[in-house]
Length: 305
Image 1 (cartoon, rainbow, N blue to C red):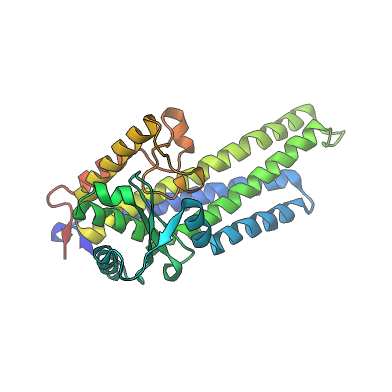
Image 2 (image 1 turned 30 degrees about the horizontal axis):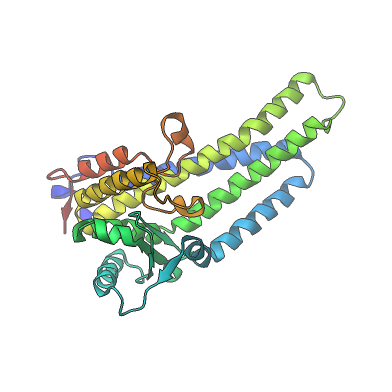
């Protein structure tokens, strides 16, 4: 656990800031869901809601098995990579959660991810490329980031956001089809009909942007938790820089890239959007994450107790 030097907060607590940002984005997403649901009326919205919840609940319940299978990860036995087991066990104890299972992915791209619906079911996976690239301090920072996702139940957060965004998308698509085939009421004013169609087109886009915004806020939060767990934010910053540079180089030269189904879970996504497309990216820009971590590493900003 880390506290501000001399017990005085010199800057706002970044973890609290990101928690509030997540709550705000959820609030906007919920308001969008209610608004577009009002355009449907009748009993259609509950049907879409149940369908979306069922889909995402299934993904959440079996996320560990699905993600491990899609990524080609192999669970490690207790006698394999003992130093890795020891490092994760120590960080898990500091975080106040059970030590998760460990897995390894036979992939030269350096990366890591966590999955599982709860801390007791969590799995942390690392690639062979990660173990070859980073030093022990950097590896500890990466593992702390993944354990922060486990500790903060980010799989559950992502599932709730996905369910809401899915409902908005279903409703928006239904309204678009209804408009295309004359499903609107005959006595509707043209402006009202046009406004409903615009909402049907823009709402799913807005819902996706909000869902991705929640994902980015959880990445920032995991970075900050990792800094608190290790007391060495600069080590994670160094690891992130290495992972991004090597990952981008490998992708640019035709090397393996993260599978689309699991790229959003990785600590670094070399395929993250640039410019306006970053609004649809699951990860914040690496440069911003590194800058925040280095700010936390400034003398007197944090101290271990």
